[in-house]
Length: 147
Image 1 (cartoon, rainbow, N blue to C red):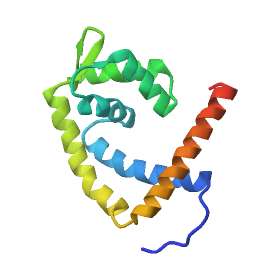
Image 2 (cartoon, rainbow, N blue to C red):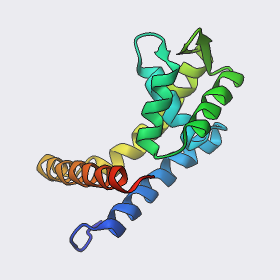
Image 3 (cartoon, rainbow, N blue to C red):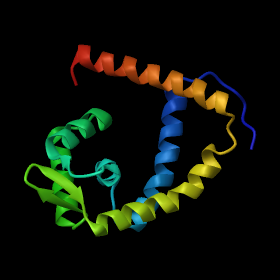
Image 4 (cartoon, helix red, strand yellow):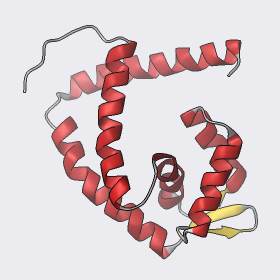
């Protein structure tokens, strides 16, 4: 597929985000998991050990720009579902949580390869620089105007 090159802008970024997110959510829906649940589950699945619950909530709030109560509720949902377990003030992935996370990664890997696979490395590096700068500026804007 060939596309006409247009300058990147907020609309282009949004369309790319929502298209990629829809691919992920299709997989998540098949497994009964929501987007925010997957965002919370991922760092715990990748951690070498238990993850501080407060830090997990703070990191998720910063990444998704959602309220802390919503994230804490998501953590509780994952505990109730048996995907995370609690150890005092930390959470850890359960065997069921790890198995689910690995299935999701396996199912999304093929789509990711099709989506990203043939984009030249130098274009990915350039896009990464631009997206990092946009995120930094948007976060600075949020910090000055309040959320």
